[in-house]
Image 1 (cartoon, one colour):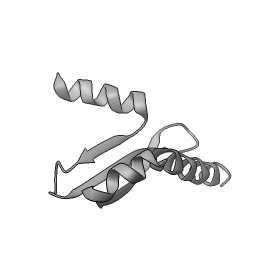
Image 2: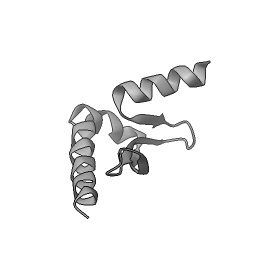
Image 3: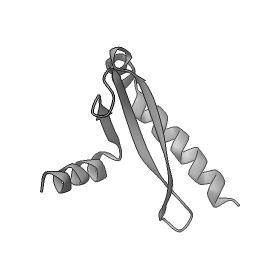
Length: 79
């Protein structure tokens, strides 16, 4: 049940966060990339030292990643 709640949160926000869960001192954000058919075909992620995470996150990291993701999806759709 907690895993399913976590998946619901990821679907809601559009990204997954790994806050030192697999490696001490490393945080990461990941987002699914959708192909022209709407199915998830790949993902992008950004990992960084935990000490740099909060300023980057608060400074618009998620929005920057969403913009990059949209550009990649657009390029895939035009092929």
